[in-house]
Amino acid sequence: MDRERFEWLVAKALEGLPEEFSGRLDNIDIVVQDEPTSSQLTDAGLKPGQTLLGLYQGVPQTRRGRHYGTVVPDKITIFQRPIEARCGDESEVRAEIQRVVICLLYTSPSPRDLST
Image (cartoon, rainbow, N blue to C red):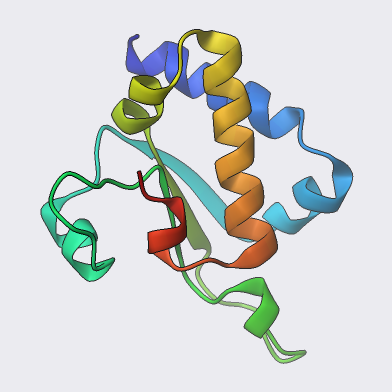
């Protein structure tokens, strides 16, 4: 699918997040990238043939103290092609985006947790 449609699905997936997760999106930019770079894969310690579905870059919310503020936004990158490759239709894509975002927000996982 084209980038515009995928970004629309990302927006719809974010709109459909339960409040306990959507409320955690403050000071976080959500961006779409075709695929992870080789540097992102290497930094994540992934083996050949593995990829990332999403990546959180910044200070995990579980590690933010009361003095956290006035900082540049953290970033969640959603990787379009790996998500499309594991989904059969748009509803699956949307659900997978939600799963990835929730996992990144809720557990502050290592990139390895969101690899395939």
